Length: 175
Image 1 (tube, rainbow, N blue to C red):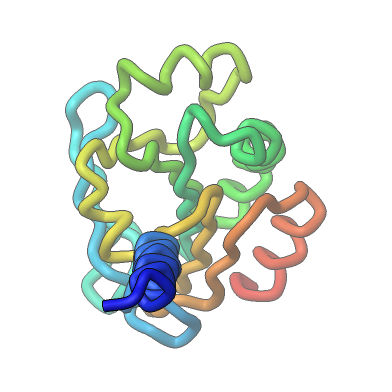
Image 2: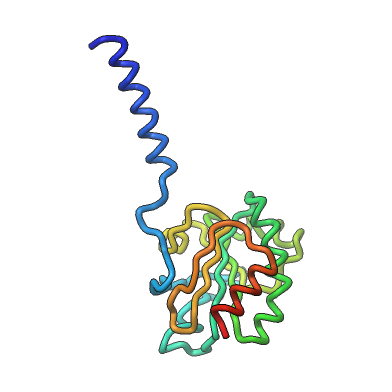
């Protein structure tokens, strides 16, 4: 094999590795999909079940649920979480549940960051092994999913949302 051919094969191998390592997961949640179940614990060990708030058998029916995936190392998350926290009371009055999920992190990793940012109003869950994140197709943070009372995804937003955008989307999907 010539040196030129070996160089070409090496370059192609590097390119293919980069593509496979950075490619989106094969599954990406989108509007109108049924929201995958969520059964995660909060910091007190109590389970939160999405099915309690959405779907035909909801025990505590909500107009909708806003699920936000974040990580303590994510700068856009640190900007978005205070905006989301500031809207929880308003959303609660409108029967909209707000849930934030520490993606691939335990409470010991992200609770200090949340305390520094004074984030205490949403339901705070941990997805330390990324199981829920995998079901939701998380591949970038922050990621916010708007889920209707029917249990269907209304929209998936990848990237930081402002308070204004959060309010507009909530008004659009959860009337």
